[in-house]
Amino acid sequence: MKPSKENYFVDKLESNASIINPNEGEKLELTTISITFKVTSEMSNDQLGVYEISLPPMAIGAKLHYHRFMDETFIVNEGQLTMQVGNKEYKAKPGTVAYVPRFTPHGFKNDTDKTVKLTLIFNPSQKREGFFKGLYETLKEVPVDSEKYLKLYNKYDSFPIDTSNMIPIRK
Image (cartoon, rainbow, N blue to C red; front, side):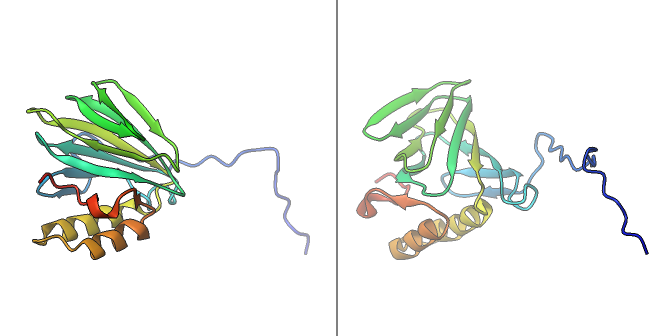
């Protein structure tokens, strides 16, 4: 029997696109933040995660932290997002794109009286949906268990700069 020849000069095309319409995707409603999964780790073979975030007035998305194995991109869609990168703060208006490579300390919050809407992109995604689902469970507890929070953070490639000030709740 003759082995079949593979054609190394012709691409095999596939139709594997995912089209996610507005208001589609799994949504988590936390007390301080709303997250909608648009492109998940499962869809992208863990290469990309795209999430819509809604921060109500005066909400904190995340305190200063960094990632070792993924980059994060912020796209501000509505409102003014306050971003901290290192020791500097930036006021990001709609249309702003902020690329935050790994090992760059960053945090974000809404310091205004209007809701901020943004898109977060993680590359690679590192199964980020697990982080958001764990965050949902952890932040529902009163008081928040800081050891459990840190364990969740570290499992999903997030490392707070100051473990005594890492819980995203205003005091």
